[in-house]
Image 1: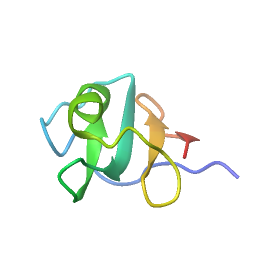
Image 2 (image 1 turned 30 degrees about the horizontal axis):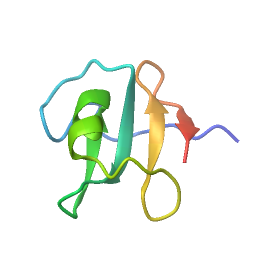
Image 3 (image 1 turned 90 degrees about the horizontal axis):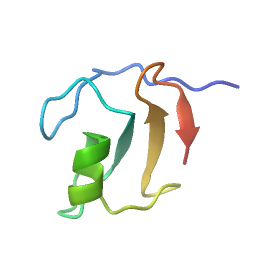
Image 4 (image 1 turned 90 degrees about the vertical axis):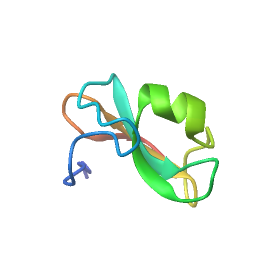
Amino acid sequence: MIKQWLGKKKCDLCGTTESKYFVDGKTNSGPWAFQCATCWQIRGVLKLGAGFGQKYNGTTFVKIEG
């Protein structure tokens, strides 16, 4: 089954709409956010899976990991 992100398609942290991938995941300060690749590398917990987050393709917004 293909899972696709249906929410807003821009980074909650910096506002960009263009990224190789996006992560809906936990930040290193605690709350979750929809993060572009750059923000996830800086402010994300850098883990994927249950309790950490899911990665989506930045063009199709299809889930690719987590």
